[in-house]
Image 1 (tube, helix red, strand yellow):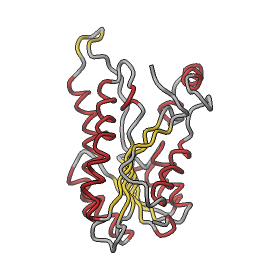
Image 2 (cartoon, rainbow, N blue to C red; image 1 turned 90 degrees about the vertical axis):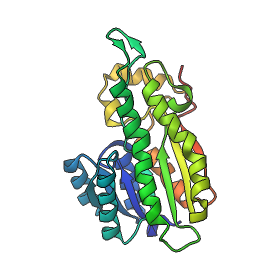
Image 3 (cartoon, rainbow, N blue to C red; image 1 turned 45 degrees about the horizontal axis):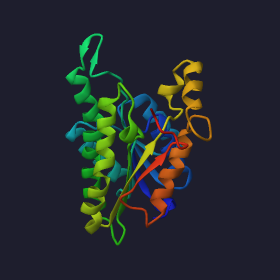
Length: 248
């Protein structure tokens, strides 16, 4: 699939990995529709890249269905989905304030895992209408926490482990529709969330990376997402993007 002819939806597209991906795809010639809850940032970015913005809550079926309809109306269809919407939580199973809050665990899974599936299932139905043989590409966002999550990451690791675990079944399910599915498992990236931490904390995180000893740049995630779209033989794979970091 050529990026120059792609019609892409990017969730979490108003900031971080999603914004970088939207900019990269647009720069390569793709049409882009951003899904996000942040209307102000989303509309500003859509205007910057000549794309479309839809206010979408990935956990809400009606909201996603409306966003998909807006994307199809704006672009004439959907060929690419990059799921970047997600949250990071930190909470121990038993902490100073008692047991892990069930609502925070459920919310993390609802946004990161169920939300990704909610979007991809509705987008895949639209992709299936495209002419074949290759009708679409889906890229989900896992995390290295799916494989070696740290303390306090039970909820986050579970949600991202679900993303990794469903990659191959999704690829197998959607093969008959001509749709490829992969996932990217980023390490520590210089997203707005991490950039908001004290500089000494950022430097400590960077020092843990094997090589290069720095935080990943969102543009590096974006380029990998673009490569997955354009490389027709990549399917059913979870790709770590982490500078060989193995968390302890």
